[in-house]
Image 1 (cartoon, helix red, strand yellow):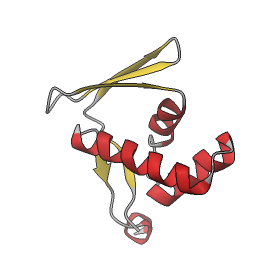
Image 2 (cartoon, helix red, strand yellow; image 1 turned 120 degrees about the vertical axis):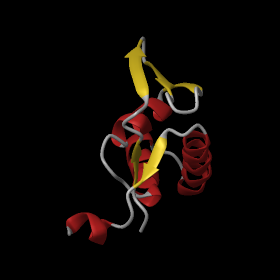
Image 3 (cartoon, helix red, strand yellow; image 1 turned 45 degrees about the vertical axis):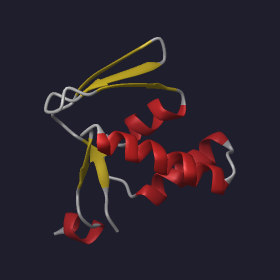
Image 4 (cartoon, one colour; image 1 turned 90 degrees about the vertical axis):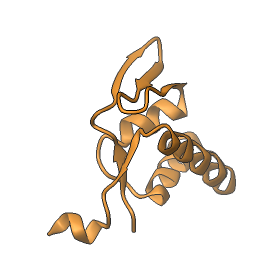
Amino acid sequence: MTLLHRNQDALWTEFDGQVVVLSVATGHYFETRGIGGAIWHLLASPHGADDVVRHVVDRYQVEQAQAQRDVTAFLQSLDRAGLLVESGSAAALAR
């Protein structure tokens, strides 16, 4: 399973419930609030996409299928902006 976490080179801040992130490498600016902000905080440590979906379903009582679509789209947006890093597998991290 591929694990994802925030790109440590990204600059970010949170104010008024809004998370604002800047990719230093690409210059992309990204802002989110609510569930997106919670996902950003969750990705401070490596998690698989399925873990993120489960977190959203459990915490926000969202339907599984809807959470899967929305989380996938959100993670893809973060990835395109250069704000995510893949960590490989859980087994690789344990070594």
